[in-house]
Image (cartoon, rainbow, N blue to C red):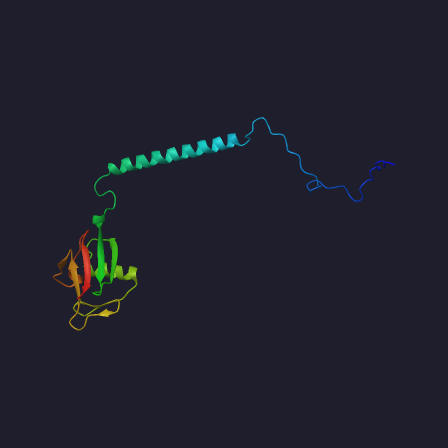
Length: 172
């Protein structure tokens, strides 16, 4: 005798809550007619970026045009600075680059380098340099100053420097 299907019995327990999986496979939602609901937002964002980049380019071009029309000396140039190099005589060198003030001497430039590089400088009563960064003048070697590759004719405290000068304090 064929079995007749039994009537379904109601499930016991609470009904499944919204948001929890019910064990059934979800059905696909029908797609909207537009297909790309975020397209207008993406286009607006892209247009905004393009306008921003164009404005930045225009500002750059106008700044470069103003730079080309500047008066001589309107902007700082390398000629207003000097370079101080300390040559320790063993291949080790330290270099500093800074502005030149009116009436600045080679010693003042070295002192400014001392502050930036955090090393010590000592001089004798005559103004000669006896020690830079722990390297003392001894055994026939001394600290010598060269300005633009020429030996200095006086102690560094008496030599006024000009913008663009290249100072080398060499241990030899």
